[in-house]
Length: 498
Image 1: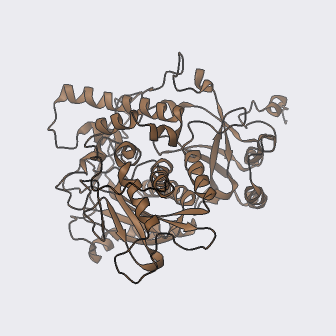
Image 2: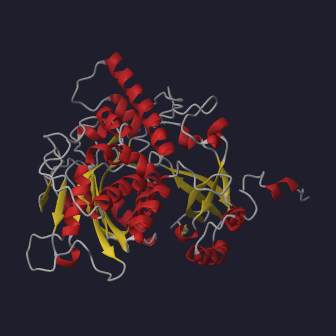
Image 3: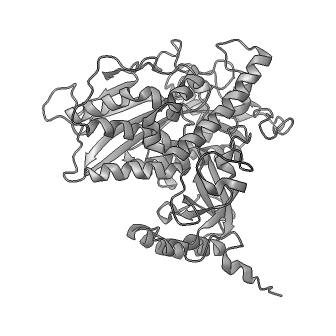
């Protein structure tokens, strides 16, 4: 017998609020049109994962039946504030029972926010049973205003600033990561808890490594990597290459240039689906910068960037001459912005303890100084000249960074200098931080960060990273590990989750 549940009309079922999207005019025409297409696809789907990106860059989701999603699409879905409150080890970093102290009243008592699906990101996942779709959402407060802690909204605001100048930022993704084989160890629950650590996944290497781009080494991982490449293409991601890097089973995945928000969405989808597809097959993918495994090399995230004029559809970094090494004055100003603000914004590209271990002389092609050069992989910013394809590559990032915040920080720094009228054109720039503690101190005192993120998100991120760092420093004080080695704490904290 069907039981009536009248309370669901008022949103108590967890499906947002009736007509939330319409009431607050949250969609543009493209989203409204996309929603009509999604309605027609829902008959082909059993379940939908409604996803958002937390401050750490991890995908958080709720899975709902397709018939529930029909309502959630326009009503939104209620979501706990928990992902804003916990650090990387799930320690409570923001006191939601007393005073959260970040300027967001709705965090008191960990009250729900409303996650509104962006219908333009709706994807039916390949080869899933039951048939499952994925859709990204935007976070809103209950009064219809964008949530102050929403990282996707930070990038949307930065892109809107570019649009005011008739510009559109373009991003190319080049991501290094590790493919390992699970060896059937314990699931890691022993000792795990809020701010405590279980064991990282037990794995073994796929090959010896250290034969860069060797076809035979790629072939040794092709049974996994080739189906992953096919999956990425079926998701509509503009895959350019899958390559074997230096370390054992270390891969690099690159994508064609995309508009900035599309690139960040693609990065979140790519990392999440790669990890899940590998796990289903008995493998483990990790985007941790440097796992604590013998002979493993560091992994980076190289962010390729250019800017297009929306009036002319031309690359504003390109020069009009035939010089092989050339970049326009606008492009030079953009690079000045990246270098001038690299120290204070570094936390958003290198958010973990381990990320700073890569900035060391033994990793020859990792940047150790804040500089730029043409076609030089040892520089932090490498400028690639090639007429209409001229662009810059910032090599500072780690592959587990929050894609919305990492990309937004780069674009914000570049635009600020491009539009200032008087680029700094310095000969030296502030030194890069050498540790997460140093990066957090620079981040904490920066007015530029506040301008980019707003006070609530800056304050929240500071609390999250302070909690993570405090736990690491307390562990180090007790264990006294060698200063230069990746610690067991880092491996347990990052290897599995990221």
